[in-house]
Length: 556
Ligand code: F6P
Image 1: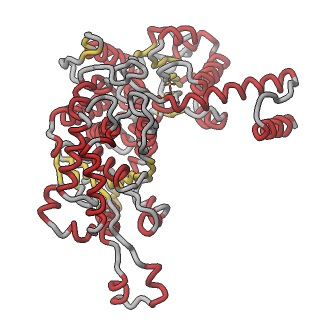
Image 2 (image 1 turned 135 degrees about the vertical axis):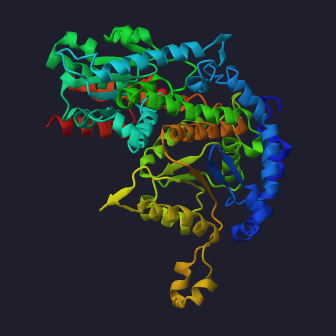
Image 3 (image 1 turned 120 degrees about the vertical axis):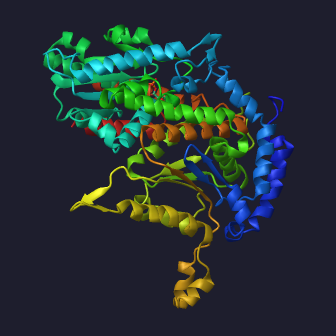
């Protein structure tokens, strides 16, 4: 496909559009009765089982989606990404988060240079530093060991590390390694978040890690200045050198801020913020908390999926299949949202992380060459762990709007509950729901079934479940560091697949800029009004009224 051709103008796209009518005539109940079809819609890799048979799709649909992938040059685009070509064209950058988890002997080029040795140089530095902190050989200004860490960062410099931290907190080995230590995340510029994060911490035993790719993000820099003040007012300004380190691509600004570049952990402009959890952004705070070897397993898990994504045929390629199914749901069946439903409390921060990765990557209105898209790209992601979500928004999913669901389950519970020496099987209780919900969505409940159950006539309409609601199930063997890395990489690559098919640039984020610049104008106005009594000027009626009220009311 020529770069100026939109995917919607290709024959495979038109064929899929025409195919929708055919699919709409067939209920999932019927599709599920075809065992051969269901068998073909199960894929296994490294003990991860994907079942996408509960999608409103036939084998012919999948075939047509592969043709669409061909028209979009999906394989070539994946190769270009792995080869370090500048696929992020609007920022003139390569996209190489896969290099962050490549093995030491791998060769991955960006601008003709193998970046893997640089990656490992930083990883080795993190290993060494985290071991020093954890063993107490790196001590604070008053000679005490640093057992607590506050990681300051927002967006991609926060959500990914928080997701992994939350997930690791249930891994028995990780728990053991983290004994006596705390890791906290300070993201919001809301002063409440600062208070919450420092409450109960002693500056003498706290290490602050400032995480910012650009080292210019307003929220992060304000929070970093606040905690610098917290440390220096308690321990003196010289204590900053022992109590603050940084992760950034901008080492000049790190130094200007007052952090010794020796205590900075670099990453590179070929790592997008939302794809940076496998860089020092995630690896440093997580290694401080759990030790490097646990985090290394997480990187290995992600790398195993990178290899799978790069080399598996599309029919067996989990991220490719997931990406294509999303395209089918969004662009053809007209379902713009997706629910991410892990049946694991440990994954409670997975959906918030994927929200950023997906929506910041694919929420675009133009193709990569700047042509306005005549179709909507991007997907609305939300989710909660089951079974909590069942008692919250599943009503809508069952009887309201059609929202394709990702059910994520784990075979082995990491935290069996023992009472009087017996395992109480809470995990089976949880997993019963994981297995039941997809069928409830797919099959529904008919008026005939309700009549047979003697449901009063007037209640029948209220109790009908139309069914025919798509979902897929991902069953992971367990939720150790390795599997967490795999899950992350599956979703990262799925999102890239969607962007590659839609023909957009999934790796820039210009859409976040306008709000930021307007906020800085407002900030200037607030300063001028508060300090010099200047009237609110230059805003529309609505904003002027709101600002004036805010200034007046908060001056009381
Ligand atoms: O506001 C969006 C964003 O630019 C994200 O893409 C990024 O993850 C986040 O802000 C934080 O940026 P930084 O790491 O440069 O502080």
